[in-house]
Image (cartoon, rainbow, N blue to C red; front, top):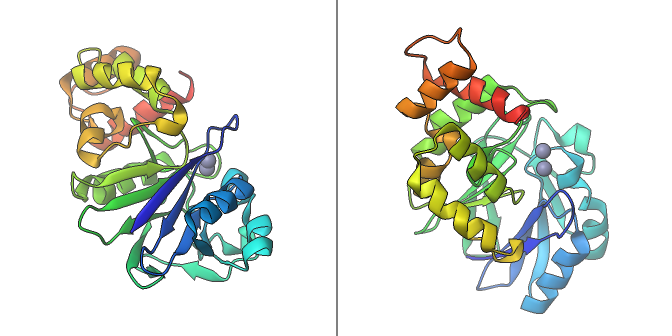
Length: 263
Ligand SMILES: [Zn+2]
Ligand SMILES: [Zn+2]
């Protein structure tokens, strides 16, 4: 399986991905908003884009569908529940569906509500797993929930699905927000040395060269995976004096998400 990450350079800081079969050169484009950049990247590599996948229905993920479909004839895949809102969807996806790219690539569809209620992530079935996570999980952060989402559902997705994937899973999010998110982690957990170290790197790197983290690293630097950290809880109780001394992880997650909305 070959992956190419394409930096949009736009103000929303979108990342696009091409996932290709090394044997046949067939490729799937994930959320190709700047579709001409995706097409040019595929041509440079000698790949043919045969499928387009939208992780969810927001326009900054679906806005390139028509252009890329016209140029390539690719089929469009998206969550079955989002298909009507997106329009032009050829295959509606459900939890556990397998998506094949060429002969060698197999991707599993995870149903991951929270950022919106019809959001999918893709998990590669490869020795070193990869997760294409749209606006669910960002580097050191979590998607917002104020455009059709629900923070309780996002917590469930994090705790019951993402946190259980192997620590070696490589994380490919839909936007580049690493430095800003690490600053939030450090605001919540100032003693987090891993986050401080990664922030140094994140501030020096150009977005097109941004490091790819693993889920194991995310568990160390992403405050939304650190719901049991005594410092996270103590500082949250300072911000929300009504909070219990031993809040449950879902409450911690929801309050962190609320703080991040206005931070
Ligand atoms: Zn979104
Ligand atoms: Zn987005």
